[in-house]
Image (tube, rainbow, N blue to C red; front, side, top):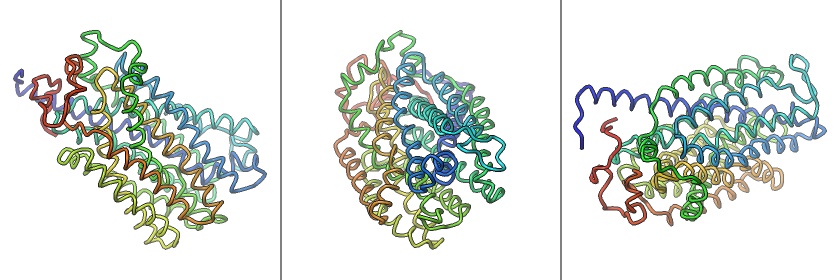
Length: 479
């Protein structure tokens, strides 16, 4: 392998830091935008956008509001298809910039959108049925952006990583999700504390408009990094697949299905908080617990911080014991925590609510830390962007798209939080089965050259790693 000088090492160390910074900042901004909507939907949108349309039926308005959270997921595969197709053809970096800008524009426009009837004190007025329609269209744009974001971010991180530290590198874009939740929950908590009753009038717009600042920062950081070395290798030999998605489903269809199933349990459970259901259940005075909004948002913020911490630790654990074992531990614990969460939250005791949310976040982080690297190692270079993006989007649809809506319906139908726990328990079992079936390819070479030589399909644990084959495309060695 070519020796590097101290100057080369310093340059590469700087590039490594920029890559990590770009994926963390970029995904944080993306998911802040996504989660602000989910946090506000159950608290405000059920009234100002859907309340008049449902003739004041609070429960039905909430279901409609949560449906807009879920409908955006239906368009995540479209974003994944587009980003995967062009990401495998024109590069990872350009697609990441595009998805960031698309999310930022859609989020800002939601903050400027008039409501159904207009609320006294809100300058933006009302536009009738056009309001929920436009809200839904902007939510669709958010879904397309979110569908294209994740695959590019994890590839940019992991394809730069040395084999023995892929789990750690793949963990960094995952941190953007809990960080985005922390930022969204913190912003909503701050604005509700400052605006009081006016939050439901005009204060809810502030977190959406704040997106402009975040997107500018994310754009600057993300534009400063280099393209993935694996994509550069493919481009240098002009070996991009002309139709990577067709090749993906023809050769790797079962892998796509299993990886999608792997994500279902994590997404369904996670969207109890990130999708806004717990926030609504805990704060609603008519059908929930009637707790203080600011307190609940701060409790969710604490859970997101725990999620981020465990995600960070899980990335390191996955490099030591493998992706599969880390996942099995996570889903095994989740079979218990889906019952504990609602048992503790329904007490309406502030200490129990906080403890329930913190405990609930632990298995989510154990799954979320290694999921990126397991996805990346499951596909050859030529279809990797398409594969990770589409499997992730499909798993998100089945697992998280309508999880808050289903939870709300179950609660209204059965009047019992344990109906929701049963639903989450079943989703967790599905993902646990997928984790057992899937191959653990920890350490498999990721280069295009390795794929061209036919090694990807025959490789097994214990075979030479990327560095041992002297085909490594990344000289990074420390973090």
